[in-house]
Length: 398
Image 1 (cartoon, rainbow, N blue to C red):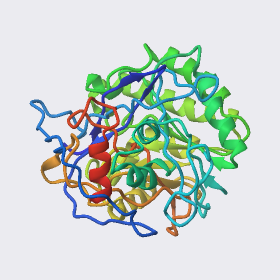
Image 2 (image 1 turned 30 degrees about the vertical axis):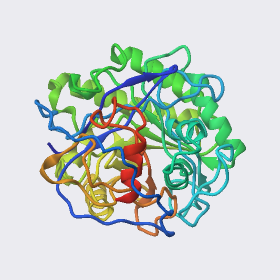
Image 3 (image 1 turned 60 degrees about the vertical axis):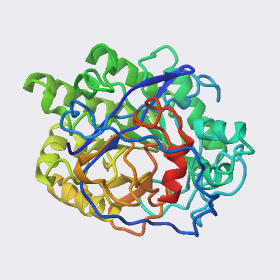
Image 4 (image 1 turned 45 degrees about the vertical axis):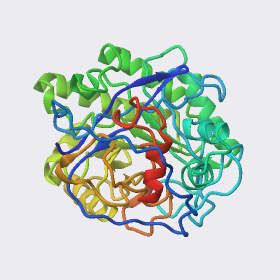
């Protein structure tokens, strides 16, 4: 139990997703500004975190799919997968309203030269709007809903994917901000586990990626290419694994050709999963150094940022390749490190990590991102991928 898994949920017209993971680590809670004032803990008890009867394969957490939205031809939701809270104004705490979709932090690394984009249509924002009298609402809005987060595209909808991607990227251009897009449609996704699904075959996936790429446009974009598709690939026969890796390399090339300012990051798992040399060997086979801009780690997992930085650098060193390769780390809920015993399903005692930023101050670490959407369930505190105010508030309180 050392990585992540997920459950895909359809919402509106899109499947949103997230990944969660386990492992053992102590905690670090990082924030660039004082935490929002929290109302007294609500009386409703937090849901328990049962242990699954059958542990997920090499990962540790079913990738709870975010039921939040992804746009179709505009900010309306479709069955795919986006999730996006608001962004900090450079001080770690969000400012502005839900309609101010472009707040973010300054860039300081290779991931972009602007601020991260907050797509305004999300489950957490919907909840805040619908519960103005809830004593937790202000804290959840300030601490989560106003931070930029990734937008997931997890349903195989070739007829709408271009318009849905373009809805995000065009809004990001208007906001002069950098969106984070998660492509999650590879065939045999999650090795048939909780997040199983994806395109029917690699030919269909290649077509889907081509259509996805058409929505990227000329602006800066960060694409998280297929969480777990590399780190969890040992479940595939050797020939199928090689075919998947070839398709991922094609995907990166197509994405970068269509979006000249798009950066594509490949799956490196996390520090509690693969050894750096093993991760690098798989990434090399998948063409990460040839076709991509670097690697991503800790998606939907809980490992401490310091551990992920060291792991990412070790992977990059082992991978070799162009000197510009970097890494992005999911810090959405790693503020207290990973829970003991490999717990993965909405484990108690977690906390928000470093706010999303393109200015990390760390060599070869391009960004800290909220890829997993804080407060969206792994399936224990609420239905998989749905927003839970109890879970969100618990992350805020740490």
